Length: 297
Image (cartoon, rainbow, N blue to C red; front, top):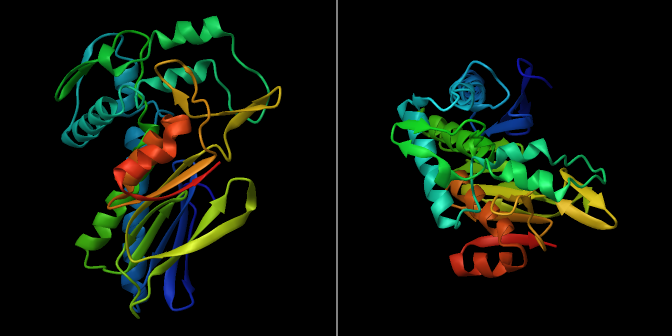
């Protein structure tokens, strides 16, 4: 299903809308009787997801991200929504001791996680890493200046942000029973009409065809970080696509998958990514945070 293609159908006692955005299958489940209202709500969610993708995707040449990444050292001032995302990214960088960094996307120039076995040369990694680091960015809200050759990439939080925006849109429209799922990043807005929670399955990273079981959720955000689909395998060692921007290399001893439950999808995604960046210390980090999580090695 490509952008511009979507489906809306009755699914038992509720409605299901499906579309693609942010390179992911997206799904909205709405527990309403009124088809016209449910369809309208789905259309609003779909348009909001596409709006966020168009505005913040690094693959486009007509948005604020492209403008910043091609400013060649010139200062770019941003709108309020972008300012808030950059502030959130700045806070994540500080809280993670520099391991969560929206300038680290340039490392894709030397890393390709396609299931192959090619490791980049260490010298090449180090050359690119010199263009990484939020601490090298001049951020004077709402204006940002990147050094030439640096880039920002909001892919590490854009999908979770879109999920929360969709859930807020539904809430503000008066919907109090829905599930938003953008590529496995989820927000549940209230229980079903009969009082039950929404059933959510957890994927087993060791076998994409099976589920580890499920959980029932009535409110909150759920996000997963892992290497099920993006990795490389070199001399029997699996290298996750989760890169440590302070070294330029995959995080050693990282779990295969971490799923976190939090009040918002954005918070869940942040905590799951922070935990992956801890490598062998992932579980201890999440225990200290006091959140519900599922960690698979």
